[in-house]
View 1 (cartoon, rainbow, N blue to C red):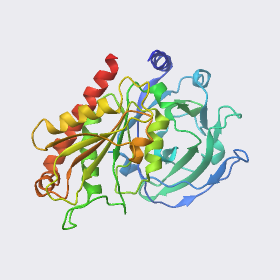
View 2: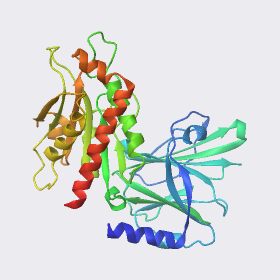
View 3: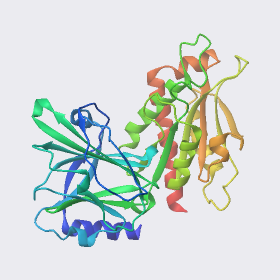
View 4: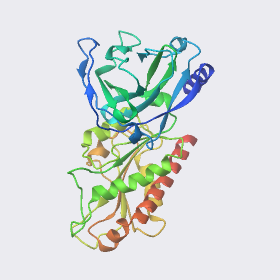
Length: 369
């Protein structure tokens, strides 16, 4: 994308890159400061993250140049500013809480509570992108230091670029399609107290198999230049609306939803892939084309019988999708042979590989159109 490439060149002309971490939740002792963001912005206390838990969860980029204070002159609106109490580089982690339309930014190793809620401001006071701002301090006794945590909820879904100069830390807000050439949403069906279908003896739940396949798929996709959004990566209940809203708001290139099947008849077996025809008009690469690739990849190895494509606009995530969507029913938990195959870890890894291959072929086709 021309705009994206120009933007990256501009960034690299003024900064050097320093890695920063994507973080997870943690526990700690909090103290809250106050600041005003206007009457339309809610105020709350942030959840505290653990630095140690953050280390294995991936990486984003922060662009740093401590030699100049001119970074702000090259930022695109909208953006946020966190003013620094000292002209030095800070250890920062960032978590994109995209299912909540939120960003969490943590600053580690602080000797005192020199950052405040008031340190965070909008680059343009007329900017209306912010819905709620939270701030908290966590004291880390083993390090004799504080962690400052900013959590910002937005009115829309954004992708972020973080910049740093001697004056401040800056957070640019972008539409994801402006930053990423290829976007994929992967949906692990069910979760939490929504177990999906299950084995006859109730020993195995669909939600767990779906999640396992997605986690194996993530390992493969992490190696590719694809921005992937996951509706869940843990055993939590995610309602249908947030799943499809994520895909539609992103205008994702592809949406893959992973499930297991079931039937009153124990003889029903094999893989089938569901697709829709609603909201697909004008798409050169549509849901049916994606479903065909997924079905072929899932069944050409011979481990799962090919039950064919199923058009079903009544399935919520399919009927409401405005992007190419394929819902993969990997196999029947009500069938003995299918169940024996899909519950094994090595076969879940195989199915993840099959889906990965279909995704890569789909992107290849998208890029040649």
